[in-house]
Image (tube, rainbow, N blue to C red; front, side, top):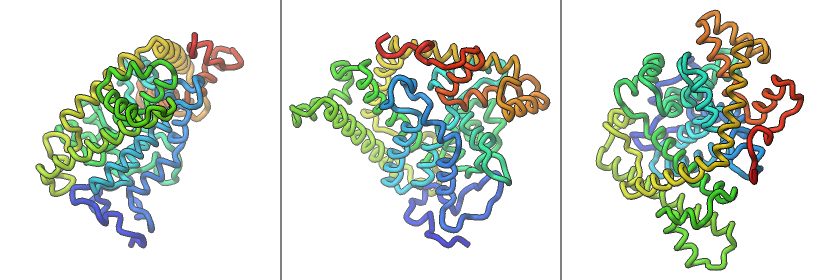
Length: 400
């Protein structure tokens, strides 16, 4: 019997409740003083994959500067937004936080460029997608417990991590993949986490883009959401220093869109009146959403960033360099798995015995995807015999 506070106390009936959780893959006794979703969150925070996120690219590769977001700081910002929304909606805050912190655990080094390269390399062997890899990390690759592989997270946390999935992959995931086959929704905590991710990266990429000099205030004033808050802040604080001006605009943009998300989601919940989480899952569409007007503004900002930041020639140069490094690593290890560290070599040989070349390729992808940016550079230097690694020689830095 649990000794602590009831983790479901004060939550809405349509929230994910510990008392009605679908449980873990491997049964465990309840924790004395923590709810099951708190336990998930804590396991994620203590995982090796979570620590590695500090040296994985968000937009700018680590050698570009110390002040840019990484996958770790991005995940923390997503979690802060997710917790705020979950609290306002009387959802499970620990579950929302756990999903937010875990959503990028399977991300490659060098951001989406790394994912694209690994997907190309894995095309003949089932492909590579970072959401599925995040699930693989928490289900299989983390090694911390005597009784099971992985972190043995609850169904609800795993459901939230798996945002996208092809029907072919869904059919291999049992109960977890059923919603993609039956076109159901995830729980509200998962829906909120997905939108918190979008809010966080849109807004912090604006900040990093300005810091890098790839974007200017004048550029961003082409975007309605930014222009409106820029005009308000400029009128109220005409002499504010530029850096504080940027932060004030960013703060107001986040408040604006988060408030809209809460209010629109409340409105939809009020109309739908879901009795429980299963009723949420059975809805024809998500209940967590922006209003129509705010969705248009959010999409405009996302489109602007894609065109003016993510496809900037400097970022494109980084993508080409990242592709060169990761493709070279994958091909070298596929050719000779003994060039990987012993535990990864042994995993590759075992998986090849069980699954053929597809197993070998998956083990190599696991190793490469788990690298940090700088470790990928170090491995590239080791394999090439360079003796030392110099990322600026492969990926042009600012000013080149």
